[in-house]
Amino acid sequence: LAKTTQPISMDSYEGQEVNITCSHNNIATNDYITWYQQFPSQGPRFIIQGYKTKVTNEVASLFIPADRKSSTLSLPRVSLSDTAVYYCLVGDANTGRRALTFGSGTRLQVQP
Amino acid sequence: DAGVTQSPTHLIKTRGQQVTLRCSPISGHKSVSWYQQVLGQGPQFIFQYYEKEERGRGNFPDRFSARQFPNYSSELNVNALLLGDSALYLCASSLGQVRTEAFFGQGTRLTVV
Image (tube, rainbow over all chains, first blue to last red):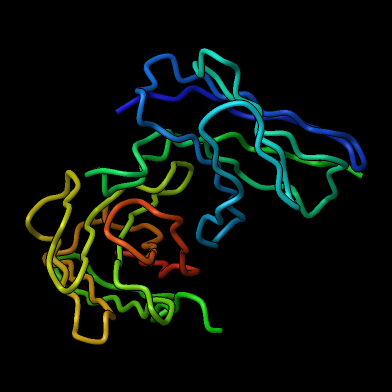
């Protein structure tokens, strides 16, 4: 399984754009990159998933360079409610791998 | 539509006791997975069930067991509880066996004293 490395914590202010970078040097050809968000005492919530280049949805954007050894989750104009732990996961979405492998995540604190 | 529901939300047990946690997946979802999350860490995979069969098992002792019922709901059982079993237990459901988008419940907070 590809190991991921993320910053332990980040601080931001309301209205700013936040970029969280995840390193995954051993990513395999069939691996996808998925980000989850988790609030205290709640289960993780799927944010976005991508394979290469850029993916955007109503919540976030995911930037993946050509070598796919890293990825960046971009949260536009964060609010206090975006304070949470963000997990980067890498794994094969198509065959065999049945478990989500979470690391320790990035704790984002948004200040007023 | 109801999301993934877990019961109970909180539970306090004594060392050595046994506990059963319950999960109802989203309607139409046939895959249920269980995760343990210790405070300050990410969730750790325990089991996956699909179509009532165990399809994956994480690195947990045999004290942990689970099953899935014909209606796709699931139970996680933990025997001979240890203090270290205190954690948030999360259930996730998804449409298929392979890793499509997983939807998590709010979890069951188990405290072992």
